[in-house]
Image 1 (cartoon, rainbow, N blue to C red):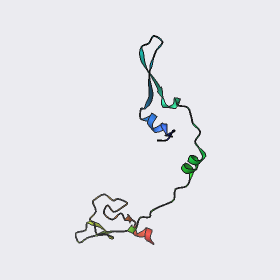
Image 2 (tube, helix red, strand yellow):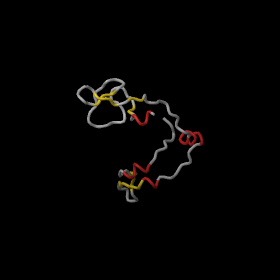
Image 3 (cartoon, rainbow, N blue to C red):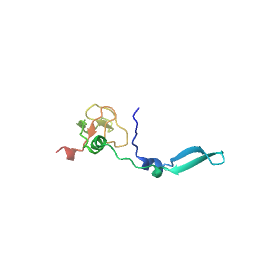
Image 4 (tube, rainbow, N blue to C red):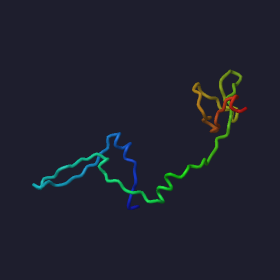
Length: 107
């Protein structure tokens, strides 16, 4: 396991997370200390990690385009695989993963 873990504390803090520590007070009694996450000291990120985080993300996959057609009953279907679609107009076919494009986009 690595010595350091770098996390984004902002979403954790917004959802109510905080730091706790169990210690003993000067009289020997157990006590709990709590602090907000923003009290954690900042750490300089290594250059290698900064390069990984700021590097542009390359597109690994393109969705095949497809169109919405109507079957003999007037219900919408995917032209690529023939799957009957529900009433909601989704951006992708749930069966084949094709991205629906409108006829005006294809021109």
